[in-house]
Image (cartoon, rainbow, N blue to C red):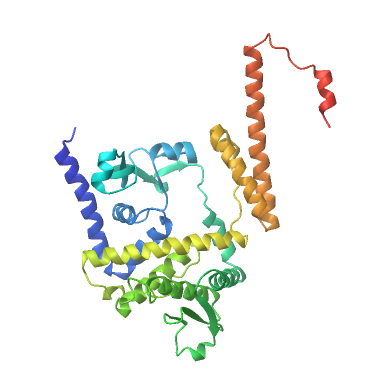
Length: 374
């Protein structure tokens, strides 16, 4: 069994390996691969995105050994090499520790352990679908891309301090759009014929508004640095909804300083805004009915605990109530019916088992029971 020194050295090697991969990102092709990883794992910390990318740049979906079995009905292939990610070790603080750390929180992170996970490519079993599989198909239609652009523009105008307007491309001096920090205004070339490029430009300028506005801590970044960040976030946003922007430039990543701290800082900022943009986009695509509801396979329902089954039922009820798209509402209702049936079947089995275990308890008269039925 490895001693503490060996474990510490191994952990340090993992992080160092990730840092070396990040330092190589001054190559544009590698940067694209990193951003692809970011688009797929936007809920992970920067630290874990770095670790996943360093160990397997082609990874798309990761989960633990047991999670693949229980949640996805897939098994990890024999001999598959695990990807290690960092998980926090959380300790409950005593009053004395709270005072020493000058915090009112009753829990704190005291360290990290490295857990093994596996990419979907290292597993076999049933197909793993995500909402983005359906979004990609829907957004292949430029009409839907235009709808998402308009919905995002309206959301920013109605729910934020940012104002989005359009001008003719001939008035923009060769640009596709711009962000004016003094007025918090985004201007987009309204007559741009490529609808996907128009949407990407809006994401790009929105990224500027979040990272480089007057109140931003990063407003004084060099121009090349700012443009690279904004373009990276736009790329991640478009990858997230499944629209290929491979023909569009990612900017001049090579202008970044080859400094570990600067690069990590830049990537951290990209991830923060990318998370925000992805969550915003996911919400808008759902409102537009561009994310088709996925039907839960029956065997998966049977594997859910009673608590999770009830949560699923309550969540579907809410989605049905909130849905404005007829097709989506119909599919949600079908899912709700399946979950309801599973709950009903389990309840009947439990009642039958109880009756067998308690034969002395008088059962209801089947004939009188008929009067209760409609």
